[in-house]
Length: 254
Length: 304
Image 1 (cartoon, rainbow over the protein chains, first blue to last red):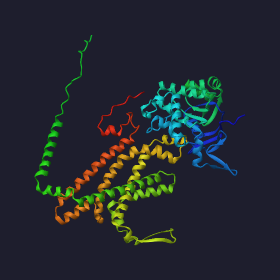
Image 2: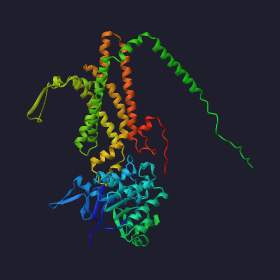
Image 3: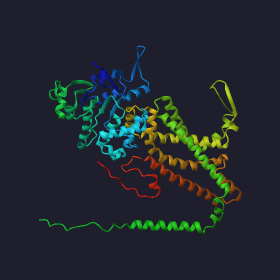
Image 4: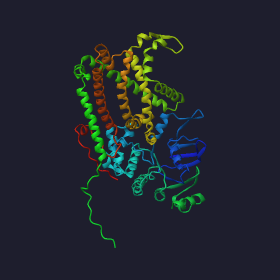
């Protein structure tokens, strides 16, 4: 058995007195596409943000590719990692946000090149060539010189995907990537994500797109109230859920 | 049955009349005519005196001092402002409190008082020494020698400006969407790099316009240093009219120069604003040359 790409054990997270994650266990194998479903407030986005340490977990542990995220064990003691180390860990994990969060003062090309050149120290020419290749891949090569605000939401999200891919991540996190989009623009983003899945990229996707989960996911995880309620192949979880809460949720969204 | 309405074309429709606008315009034009007549016919303006001093060498020296002081005090203010703003936004509660206290004190007391205070620092501290706190001293200097009028002016104006700039910069930094820092963090950027490359350039759009006003305020605030006998533009004309009693024409000379410099600053500010507006609108940013040659910007096609 190979090392899982993500290994979350008993992950807990509190905001003040509100416990958002109450012990999440989840394994994601290399090349696997896991879709997390659940009602809003179930903690699914929070869990995703814990995986790349945008949120610091209060208990349990998350490993990515065998490496403990955000903490280190030294002399039998667990301690918080230094910022520099956290930054290094994040380079291996790509993230796509609901609100795209492209850098509005940079062109599309600069958005994609910024991290490879500035963080990884790739030579400009090489990074530029790869940025063009990635933009071609998401179908936006002709928009390289445009500024994000000149693009539609769907185009911006595809640029955001290219930007994350430019760091050659071994894991991609998608936090409701289509929730801020007009309905007719959802398809182009999902198609891009599907092509990444087909190429064998390990992905965790938080979404409300049941159709995408059915078609692309290797496994669907249903979360509610800060715990994983049900997990399994999409056909099982979506068509024949065993848990009452999953049934209730699916009857509302399908 | 309702009959088909007649075919109407609104092209070339008559405009609404605005009689009150005409009245207001006539009143303002009459007032303007009176002002011009006053300027031309009242001999007390002594325009010949204005003309003889406006490009006098001694006035030039005063302008140079005013400009020098503006540049140095503003530089001190901006550097201090960045540090204070970062301090007020830091996670360190002691730094936050210290920077907050600084802003509170220096914004809460008149700059004129601060200037006079720095100028008279020797009454408070006859000697200034550098060394280990509460320990041995390495260098000791006489305050009266150390604090020249120029240094007192730089300290008074610069430290005060720092407090105002801190608030302007803090506001600019806070106006940048937190999602930007998150996206940068997710890409593995360090916080320093995120600040330099992502947050600050976007904050500049909000920082530049009020900073432009601050530069103009600073230029005029330098006239306060005349109270500590530093020969800036105002002090120079004062020293002339104290001798010649040509008070009004010399004050007009000073006003002319203040207006000329602020006008130049205003144009400079609009160039800087254009630079930092990159990507802020759906229109492609206008290049410097397009602006300089007065080419009209054409809206670019927006894809949706």
